Length: 635
Image 1: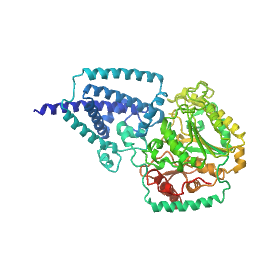
Image 2: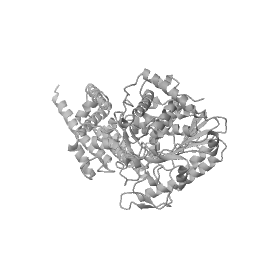
Image 3: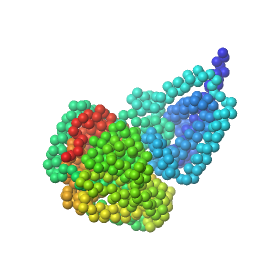
């Protein structure tokens, strides 16, 4: 048997795959850089085609890692299909999909594709519903002809890669062995090796990571190994001391609080989708304020700026913080979607819902995003009302040509679910009205400045119109709540900016770009039943909302919420838009100035370390706390 022809054939296939991989990488990088060719590229310039070529050819050795990964994928496809033309067609389709997906995600959220993004594939149908209809039709047509072409090629092609099943099996095993380390690229075992090869992960900024290291490598860099850096003092003994410490603190706090629980009361958390104040946007001048009612509400109750961890997206991460009290910034930068990445650690004991008898979530949209159904079940929610649940949301009207169910209808759904029984009730509302795309027909609010940018004036004015509808609906909602004899407390916040203000530098104006309004409000019945305390903070962390809400109502706390109260009262606000892969946090004072963790006082550092111990134990550690009375319903 002459082995030389086989070696030659093997080399020819590798040469073909090398060129295919280089072309695929180049095209994918175009998708990454298309929205902003200068983003993260230093002095490369503004020509996206040249920048893509610079990345592939000579600007970073990490391009070689991307190429190797792509070549291994091509080999695996070829070994499975045994038809090189099939591999070429599949590679073309996969490259096109990746390029379009990168562009769409970056253009909307300023985030590249990560492992967490891929979890959304389970909601593919709903994601498609948000895309431009022309893109959907074109994709369906291309997919149909691709399938037809694949069938024809597979049956007719004589370009067969392997005649020997044994040789094919050996190569398949070798390909799998070779590709597996790439899936643990940021693990302790392989991280240093890949760093030497040229991978310099920027996992706290997926866009810069994709620009600097390549779109393929950025996905692998984002893979979650351990969610948190283990605090040095973590042990069962340390946890036991912590339980004792904060159990005593809870007794001290509770001596000054008159109310034991929320019996006969309702607490509502409302996440207002993509809502920020136009006055928070640097350089934006408009003809009139679309939020006069919300401005007035904020002036007359506890309120301020919420420091969001997201920009143009990240809704479920912010929601996770409000419900659990855990802070996303405490996790490694690879954790961007806790609902999908940390599902196993979510427990009803560790959420605000644990304090209530009846717990429901209302979301006037489908319930398939962010693994919410499974997560809410773990949290002990009694029901999740959506447009596709067994019992759907009752009110589903849209307003002003909007693409989604209006906030007016969303609020009506909440009002219809407020309990009349002698129990405690928690309701979470996730609105959808102001989600992209913005298709509101009215133009009552005009953009005056900027006039010389690439800002989409039509989109911004449509968004402002949506804010106006939210403003009116929110005031009506509060008026209706105030008519009720049942005590009601409302925690209301915008989750993140919409990704439409592209004239704002999100690096130099990072705090502004991550600021949204929040307020914590009581109806007259709640003020009468509980009293009230002003808990305003100019800058607030969403993970502190529950401690703020309980303090406002004079509610007694368990050991966990005693710790969160200590954080609220003695530690500066956690800065949610800065991530550190070594486990360090940064903070903000009430003027918005950054404070490093090492600059905190000794007492503050001790409280922060206690908080990290709790979060680590529950999400990554051995869950010692779940065997104690640290988390318990106050009775």
